[in-house]
Image 1 (cartoon, rainbow, N blue to C red):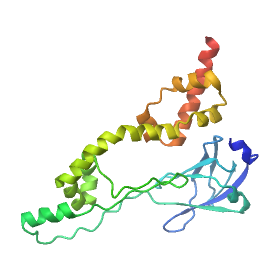
Image 2 (cartoon, rainbow, N blue to C red; image 1 turned 120 degrees about the horizontal axis):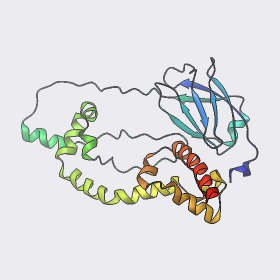
Image 3 (cartoon, rainbow, N blue to C red; image 1 turned 30 degrees about the horizontal axis):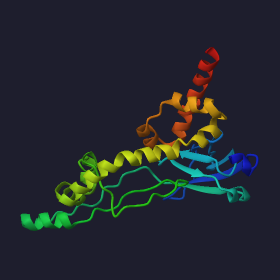
Image 4 (cartoon, rainbow, N blue to C red; image 1 turned 120 degrees about the vertical axis):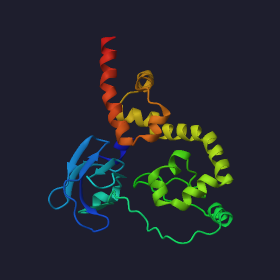
Length: 241
């Protein structure tokens, strides 16, 4: 359990814009492991009770929400710096030129490999990447994707190889969703957050009624918030029964 690391102490941090290096005031820094919150001051600094292994979530209007898992060496520094990227979409330049003949154009599209635009959050284990992402129809048909990656859109739409990969992906998708859900909503994690055990812990997990789809798509801090809200309802119903 996390308590093995020792008692919580104060973590001192500074939040900056990852592109301009400017300080970010008003950034919310939440420790979802202890349900504590801090907000950066006029100098971009904050102080928050934490301990190694706690999960911190950073959010600021106009910036991507990121999470970090605290490390023991952070508490040895006078000030830890955290960088938040701007949550802005930049469209790539589009060059207009003469189109080749239809058959040649189609062959170019089929042979083109889509660009990997995936990303991952700090503090979360980086997933093992495939050769490139297999997109579903609703993803590559999205207007924003078409505007940003017109060649990739045509490749996904025309290529027979992509259609076969999508079929295989749909078969594997359910097992992937279940695996992600089990990793997030682990019995030991629920026990540590709620201090429940035995049959009471089992009953509470069933009481939550979280579907695999909900768990796989929802950030951990939101699952934690929902679970703790349900915990009080669970205890009230047990006392009434």
